[in-house]
Length: 413
Image (cartoon, rainbow, N blue to C red; front, side):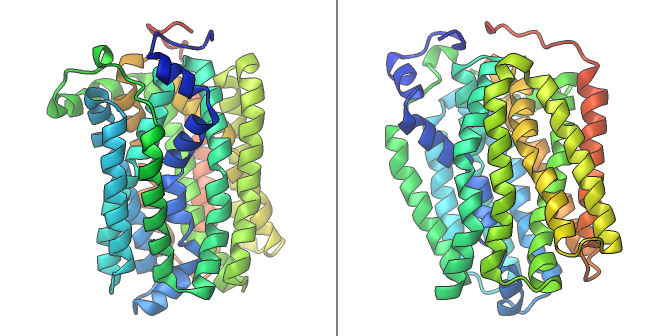
């Protein structure tokens, strides 16, 4: 296979091409979305049950993002030093403990604390799954494989809100987190079939402290920083969408919680479609061209959403249509930005993946909080934040990425 970067164990190579390997990696990468999407229909219910306001409940999403962003900075170098499988297993155990803690929470503050722990565990899967793909494949091929993984993992956010709404209807909001505990246990079992993709001779000898300092060196690479900043603006809009739509749809437009998952699922179908297109075109058109197309369309969708939410154009459809445009571009923006950023650092794929992921998700800490801070009872706050995210991802993608030369990598492309 021409996309293989260097020799790996026969077992790893065989399983890397198997459906089992694909499914396990997709499940690991889905931990972020399943941890947030399943409980979205329950946010208004949580505000009532925990005797707090919607803004405080939206902070539970911000708390998750704090743990998810900072946790990646730890798991990246740990994965480069000790391999991928054991750190992922430890992360899944932390995810299980955090999910159980959320189910047992009696206050919003307790929920925020357990959400942080849940996130620290959950982020080990995505950051090291991306690194495993980079262990095996070179730049454009890795973007193709990441798109394939995201296409498969799209099932999680597609079903997450629908499943969460049904669990809420027949059980309770606590039941949503107990379901997450069960999914974590299944992931632990699945890890038994996951091969190690980082041989001993390719592991980093850096201590954790040295590796953390090494992030300064990685951040000085303008191309990596460009992809990370552009993706960060995009994810800022995504998490404003996650924090804002439960209240915009359910409370403002009176959409039933069970139907919320269907509207959410429309955007996931769009995301899966662009991931499918990306897998077909990336080897021919390249990562950068498709990345720029995605940022341009995201900007258009974000601006349209801001205008519709400000002036009430189109009612509910005025939110649903531009959100579809914006969220769908995840298929062009994320896989290509991650592959482009990691291309220059094949020996530090875990750390580079962690830095990019932390910057991508880190912006969501602020935007999800801003939706609560500036809430005015209308979709306008969500709209202008997503509009700013769309403009930011386009401008930074053009200024910081397009003008730079292709990255130099020791890996054979």
